[in-house]
Amino acid sequence: MNIGTMGSMVMIAKSWDIFSFGFRLLKKKNKDPDEMKAAGSFRTFICLTAILVLAAAIVIMIIVGTTLAGIRMGSGENKRYGTVSGEYIRYVQGENKYLKISETGLDAYELRDGDRILMIFDRGTDQLKDLVPETQYEKRMILNVTALLCTMLGCVLLLIAFALIAQGTFGRPFVLYYNLSLKRENPAWEAEPRRRLYEEHYAMAFAQKKSIWLSALIALVFLLLLGGFFLSGVLVSGEVYTLLPDRGLVLISRILGGCSGLVYIILLFLLVRFDDRIRPLYSVGEHLLHTQTFTRNEAGRPGYYTRQGEWIQLEEVKVKRQDEKIVRLKCRYRVNRTGKEFSRDNYIAREDPMFHSVIALSASQSGGSLKRARNIWLLWVILFIYIILTAGNLILLRERDKNVTEFQATERDYRIGEVRTCERSCIRKQALWKDC
View 1 (cartoon, rainbow, N blue to C red):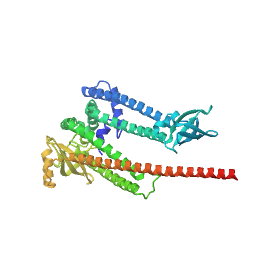
View 2: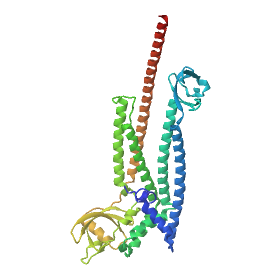
View 3: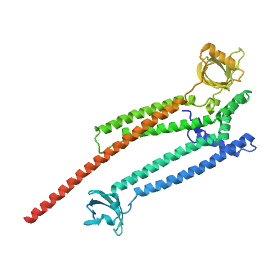
View 4: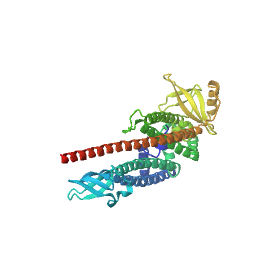
């Protein structure tokens, strides 16, 4: 996927080079007006990013502390488990003891006979310090871990969203200057009289609101598909300990989860495949970086010279996309020295003096017509399929968990019944011994 749009402002693909470039720009003396504007943009971005990261770190640390406190509940103390029996909690502290539920404040939990209660006693005095229903303790732990994971994911999404917003607003001068600087590292490009024509087209296309919003939408759909893939993985690989593997609900959840995961992978592949076609033409830094200006050699054949001065001859072109100012071409080249051929995309402006010669070459050899690509509909189709699949997976996951809970309750009641039966049997045996 073309992650240049996202990677221009966050540490995803080429992050450190971008930040290193920005810090070098801040230290540079005697800046020209464009450099001063770009440096100010980068300074604003860094300051706001630091504030955002610090706030996210504080929130994560608070949730981590809460989660660890729940995990370490009673660590260093004596733990015992009591059992609900009628209106009392029965536990062992040297001998069987009973604690009235109404005096503990646990009557609000709607406890039933056989429910286990986690009890914390002071290690020194062996006095009761805290108690909580085991099911409530487990729910609290699951809630804390879920909150931690959701917070971490939310912080990542927030940073990406902030980077995309920054790229289209206060961070735009820096991103534009960075991409232009990468292209200007080529001495041949710096000496090319037509470079300003292409740089102006790129700057105008990059500043389009359509380009910015499309970049944000593509990044959002990409992240949603990854989240959906992990959700389907829960249905496929999640272990349901209280259900047998051959039960229908588990089998259906795993089949549909696997099918959903496969569809998510296909949608990701389509998004990666058509990403560059969806974005406005000449609005991404890679478009400018891949641009080679055509010229003619001594024999009058079109092509271009490499940095080493080697002649690359244009053999065939095919129009892939076009708008009112730029045409995207699929070019087949031949290395003049070795005769080796290769294909690569290139871009040519309509105002370029070589435009008509190149297009004539396309019409005579490829016979293709100039058509404008329209692939924005693909994003909405992918988003619609994602919503349908995710809603189905969530409903299925909820129903499966309901089934687990009911089965657990049945099995627990069965075990409680067994214990009570054993207790009654022991009482009868004791009575018989007394009679003897």
